[in-house]
Image (tube, rainbow, N blue to C red):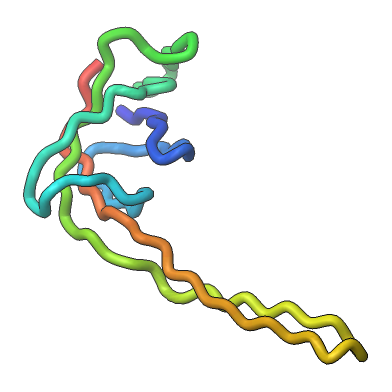
Length: 103
């Protein structure tokens, strides 16, 4: 069984036991969270789509880690204009392990 969930403005296809990194969620490490924004459920040949959400469907996930991604370097330059700008960014993430899909 798999589910398509929405968190942090992005959509993820998840199955039980899978680990994934999502946008930061304010939760403690080791705690379990419930994601109720389930867009679709699938099991074998049957797929259940929501309009926009599947009623009564939830995904239970355990918070494994809170961290930061690798640095993304931004470099802007205008040739022959003596303009160079350097900038860096590290995005925060929450690593989740999907425990179960209820639907």
